[in-house]
Amino acid sequence: METIIGIDLGTTNSEVAIIRDGQPVVLEEDGDPILPSVVGLDTEGRLLVGKPARNQYALAPERTIRSIKRKMGQETTVALGDQKYSPQEISAIILRTLKNRAEKTLGYPVSRAVITVPAFFNDGQRQATRQAGELAGLDVVRIINEPTAAVLTYDPHPRDRERLLVYDLGGGTFDVSVAQVEQGVVEILSSHGDTQLGGDDFDQLLLDHVCDSFSKKHAIDLRQSPQARSRLLHAVEEAKKRLSFEAVASIEEEFIASKDNMPLHLSMEIVRAEYEDLIHPLLIKTLGCLDEALTDARLQATEIDKVVLVGGATRTPLIHQLLEERLGRPVHSEIEPDLAVAMGAAVQGGLIAGVDVGPILVDITPHTLGIKSLGDLHGFMSPYHFSPIIPRNTPIPASRNEIYSTVFDSQDAAEIRVFQGENEDIRFNTLVGEFVVEGLARVPAGNQILVRLDLDLSGILNVTATERATGLVKRVTIDNATERFRVRQRSDAVDRLQAAFETVEDQEGEDLGLEKPVLSLTGPSPRHIHEADDQTATMAPSLRAVVDSANRLAAKAEHIIPGASDADASELRALLGSLRAAIERRSEDEIEGISREIEDIIFYLEDK
Image (cartoon, rainbow, N blue to C red):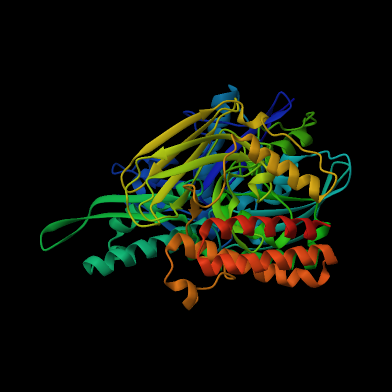
């Protein structure tokens, strides 16, 4: 039976896959499945493809071509050395390299291929892709849409009809497609997108940000130097990738420029929130395309069964957040976003060749892992806030980190309590491990702590907390973290709360109140939290935080009282009177204790 290879010809990266033992497998070279979609010539005129060409781009951009996919279908040429080439010819060089990789791995020639294209590609772009395949010596048996390939990767034969929304954000193009899968048939109900929007644009925004910062400091625009610009473009691309998993990324480029005969170095940190602010307008554009696709498919968000992420740029946490907010359901990225399309192309090739393709197995973390922090909970600040770090359904092994801050001035210790579960209240999740970082610098509140979770295939979780200012590190290893989750059956709100409090009491009688060293999330405050009024402005920061929280809780209780039973309303009024008296006395312990009683009643009433 002849092998039909599947190829994802991408803007930034390309891959080739086959079906082996009923499973799609992306073929590697030197342990790497990804071939950068970059072509160049070295100083002696020899052809470079993939990593060598990408590495050369920083030093010789004039002899290197990247992102050629954005020019597919255009009547244009690009220069490579002293020769002019069409976009199809440059793409053919990439395809030929992938064909050779497959033949080297398989040990025999291959001539047939399925090649993927963005769903929003027009006919001219599709024909150009087919021509590129033919120039590479391939019989292109099928051109399929990238979203179709992604759907095949997740489940080519679902038992029941499924409607999937595929959000495909690659290096140079964006697609959103609504697909229906039934009895092995994939039907694309609608597609929308932008062939000039992708990770390359994110790189440009980050490059401009870095160059503007450097220009303000040194009055030199690094974009004016082709070599400096290409070096920085590679650096910001790597930083962007790290920011998908890290809370902060460093960019270090020595001898990037000179001034007054003195060398200048670039050294700066990019915080994820800063980067996400830069790209937020582009992500809003993708949501507009999403809405158009749903409208064209005549579907509501509630009628979508699964949301599938494709493309390396979809690793950005903000994309997950925006999609879950817009669609009201979790997103799926269990299949490696960079590899899903190539794997789907191989599935399509296998189906054409008559190969029996089985379901794809992926190891994921079944529950969200995170830590206890001071944060917003049900409209007020609470020490029971659960801050996720590794979301559920993340492929493992997985490594993620987030930045937190100390709450008190001169706080010399921070308690790291790791929980597993899906509730924003830690009392309904499961404690999997804890430790204390001691010896922190005695500085004002806001001392940054980087908390990192590393989960391996065996379910072993390594937790690391690092004080960013001093480099102080504390680590702990938790065995079988993925197996510790316990589902509690709760018949009503009272039982649910009681179970949570019993869990707290079991933890050696520990008080989870604000007087303990805790961590709070950094970044802007939620919009419903206002500045302290005149009464609290003169209070100590810790007391002010407790009073602000108590005032918001009191307002919420007063709003609930009219709909409560006489007994509950009477109890709430009495507690509110005690709370106001405690605030006047500025008794932090009393305020917190009464607030917890009010919070318990509110939980009970809201769940009735």
